[in-house]
Image (cartoon, rainbow, N blue to C red; front, top):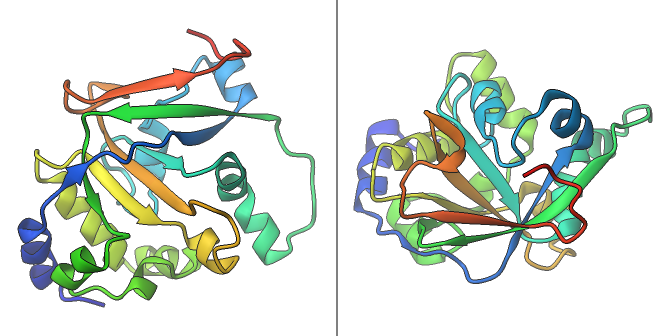
Amino acid sequence: MVAPHTLASSVQAAQPGPTPAAAFYRSVSLKVIINIGAHPLDGAHAGASGGRYHRAGGAPICYLAGTQTLATFECEHEAMVLHLPSKPLDPRITFAVTVDNARILDLTNPLVLAVLGVAPGDLVLPSAHWQQLNRQGVLSTTQEIGETARARPEIDGLLVPSWLGSFLNNAIPRSDNLVLFMNPAAPEQPRRPGVTMTIHDPTNLLPP
């Protein structure tokens, strides 16, 4: 693990770039959308529960996947990878999202990783790795990167390699995730007003 003070100074030195041009995808539980009325892009739940690039109990955050297949697999990876007993899963809907005018720190770029002093393999360790560290009261390297990047107002999010894509030997094209920092006062919106997220839902299954 990289020393936190060293990593923080390295993230401060790294420069964000433009949003990738391609659309990304998000998979959500239809029950949550219809019964609870949560907005499809609401990042409050993820922010509270903790994840690979953020601490539990933190600000809202939205994870998007490079493809529809990856978006689904990311939601079901634990049962699939750990061979847990199968059980009925709540139906989900996957939709496309385009993101414009975001300034993204690209962690798929070897030059950026060199500035951070982080090896590519550090970003794709199994989820059990950061979860175990969190139980010990320690942030993982990826969480340190995410928290430090969030502290910089000129960074709107991260482009990161998918752990699941790595596990599947990158058999899925575009096995990257886009991680966006959302607005604590309106968790369905990016934290910087200039960033736009547009949902593409030709089926009209999602509420407005």
